[in-house]
Structures are given as C-alpha cells and as structure tokens.
Length: 490
Image (cartoon, rainbow, N blue to C red; front, side):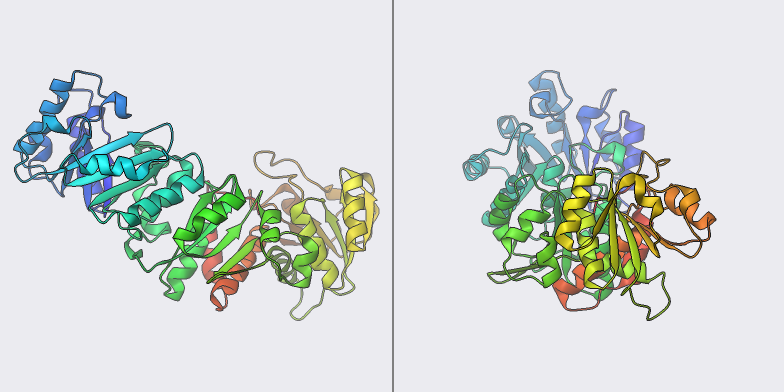
C-alpha cells in the first residue's frame, strides 16, 4: 500500500491535500505536528476520502511538535475516539494510549543518525509494546544498511513497516511489497516530503510500477554514486513494462562496491547496471568477458544466474551503434578516420570499440600524456590538443565533459574547423543539443546526440539480462520524457 503524508500548515490546506492524495494513494498520514494552527481533528476526519494514519510526531523523534507530552498524546487519543483507522505513536509513549477502540496502533522507532546493528532487538522491543503494527525507520549511511532493512522486513512474520531514510534508503521504499512491509510513504509532490529520500507518488507509480511489485518480482538496478538523477530506472522499468516482465529496476547509491555485492544476496538480484565510479571494480568481479570488454578493463553490466556472475561492457557497442545511425544503411566503420576527443573511462570504451571495427583512430586530449598512454595501449595515434583541427577526419567523437551542463557554452572543437558531411557525435547529453552539435548542424555536418549512446547501451543491457532484444523505441521515448531535470554520467 501507498501512504501519502499530509504536511500542510493549515487545516483547510490539509483537507485539500487529503482529497488530492486519495486519487492515487491507499491512505494518508495526517502529520498534525506540521499544522501551525489549532488542530481541528473533527473537520479533518469527517467524511475522509480514504483511511487515515494520525501522527503527531515529537521533535525528539524527528517531528515538529515541541509542546508537552500530555497535550501531544491527548490529540492522538482524540483521534482514536473519532475513529481514525490508524494512530502512529513512538514506542516509548504508547502506554499513554489506553483506549484503542477500533483504531490500530502503529508503534514506531525512528533513528535519524544511523541504522543500528541490533535491528532485530529493536523489533522485539516494539513487539513487546502490544501495538498492532511495528514501524522502524532509520537513516541509511551505506546501501548495505538498506539491504539489512529489507532482510529484517523479510525475517519478521508480523505486520510491520520497515523503511530506510536518505538517498541510500530509496530501495527500501520501492521494495516494501517484495519483502512484506505493509506500506511505503510517498510525497504528494517534491516539496511535500516528510522524510529524507521520500519519492513522490507519481514517481513511485509511473517510474517504478509499485502496484505490480510482489514477492516474486525480479530485482535489477543501477549501482553508482551519485545516482539520484539517473535516467536508467525510467528506461529499464519502461522496457520491463513493455515486455510484460515481472521485474523492478532500483537505484542503489553505493560507496563500497565489494561490500554491497556481498550484502545484496538477500535481494536475489538478477542484474545490475554499473556506472561511475565502480566499472573497474565490476570488471574485477567477473572472469570471462568478451575480447573488447577485456581490453577496456571496465564492466557496466552484471548478470546473476544462480551463483554465477557474468558481465560485459555495452558502452562501446552503444557508441558505435549511435555513430552508425547517422551513416548510410549497411555502411561500415572500417577505414573511417575518427578523431576522438578525450581520454577518460568513456573514451576508453569508445576507442577500443572503434579499433575493433577497423576504424583509423586519432586521440586528442587536453592532457597529452593521457591521450598518449591510451593510444599506446589501443594501438592508434595520439596528438596534442592544439593539433586536433589539423587532422583530416570523417567522424568526430567528443567524450570530454566540455559543453556539459552547467558549462553549456563550452565546446571541444571550434566551429570554423568543422566540415560539411562529417559525422559529429557528442557523448554529452545534458543538454541534448550541445554547442558542438548546434554549430556542427550549422556547418552541414551530420550530428548524433549523446542520448543515442545512452539509449543503445540500455537496450544492450536489457538484452544481456533477458535474452530479448531491447525495445529501443520504448527506451528512447522513456529517456526523452524523463530528460528534463534528470541526468546521468555514463
């Protein structure tokens, strides 16, 4: 179930938000501690549009109520008398609710500092209070904490709500139904969250398909840091929906890759996308990879099949597919003269992919030594940055960060050196139309947006996991729809 917290400042606004939330949510939580006027419970609960949890959270447990305990809990007793479906009260104050009538009591524990090691002991303490439902919400400092919370939820055969707060706790909010929690909390809008890391209800429903998640749903996800604005959940969940697969794709903000992989076993993951800064660590995890991935030394896709973990790098093939999309049908990259700008991790994948296709590659980088080292390893040529306009090329590939938001007026290649008919591919896709691409179009070049590489690598990951061709058009449409305000580093 989905519960939307109502955090309005007035009774009238709270009532209006309840009506809005009830269109999508299963219930609402009336956060009385947010009200800045006298609470009118009779007004709020009369003819309510859906079941209600009444909460008056004390400041010591992360709420806003700073008055006396007697007054605070008396409001909760009034909610019981008025027939509220649920009342949420802290475990050390539950004794003040003597009359419960038909109201179910949620006994809660909040920790905004950490996720303690003794989670099972805390759960036993809450169970000992005699409440109907136990709730544990803790701050997640590592994604392994989030996995422990999921495991706790799976272990407890009692009515419970187990959630992790903060950006690293997001998986617990998405996977509640898989691991047996009664509900998750989702904000009515981004400015109405009642706890850190809370998703909006539209994201929970539209991006993560919350209503379709159950105990048998297969878990996939993206591992990286930062990860909060990743486009990957938008596109992979859209692909799973299109193909009718009972799968969910979740963001995992991970600092320690090896620790997370070990702790993730309780999730029974089927596959992970791997982004910065963990691609090299992922390559060390798997042994058998294709020749190009082995040369790149970085893995961006992991697949779990029982105890066997396999991996690949879809970045290089995606870059080649993006470039080929601008060429004549059936055209080959063999013999094409390609200038690659940059020498970082993404460049490495692109260079080895181009070399494997028979292209003649020249690398230019602002730090010549890095270009020289990559060229030596790949078996191609490096030139100094200031020489990049002097090379005859059929294709120009930018894999530097020049032109990326917010430095949108930067460009890695001067307009006057561009020549009509060249293919210009910019791996930067925030913004989609970089200055390089705008100026290339003005010079009658054939331009390829960076989002095409993202689309093709996501499709290749989908196929690697499922054995089905990735639905490219579905992925492209989902990426385009989600693009405003969302970006990810490949």
